[in-house]
Image 1 (tube, rainbow, N blue to C red):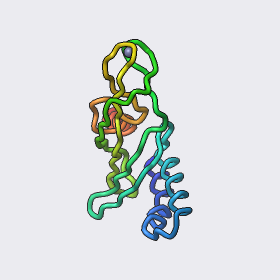
Image 2: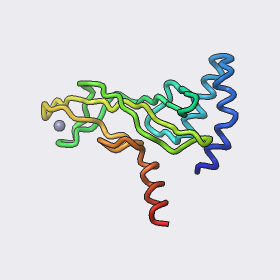
Image 3: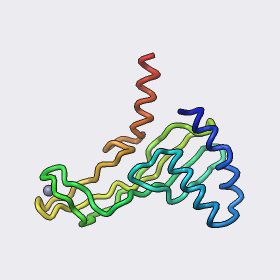
Image 4: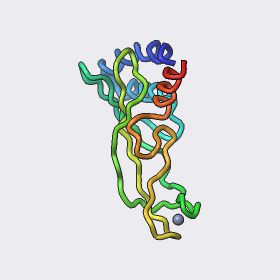
Length: 140
Ligand SMILES: [Zn+2]
């Protein structure tokens, strides 16, 4: 997977630095979403920090979440919780996702809960695929 990421990211870096027009930015965002295999979120902004790596801001699509206690859907946003998760490296540079794990309030239970995200498990500072990669390296 890292080889694929490197191959796709090369032209993206050039596009990102050129900042020619919105159309290119849109193409770049779409490519980043494909690159990161985002299913329930989209890329808001991409930062390349020299000597550090990439920070990709992602935002969840949709405005509701399912309460883990009762299974009811909630659209009542309680709080935003922004945090970072380390993802697979790209072009030999570290990549961190900045994401928002929204907290909703359940109208049935009357209690707040944090939404589930496909990329990052709760209370983890690394993505699921990063964890899988580390486990594979340890096992092999
Ligand atoms: Zn509930």
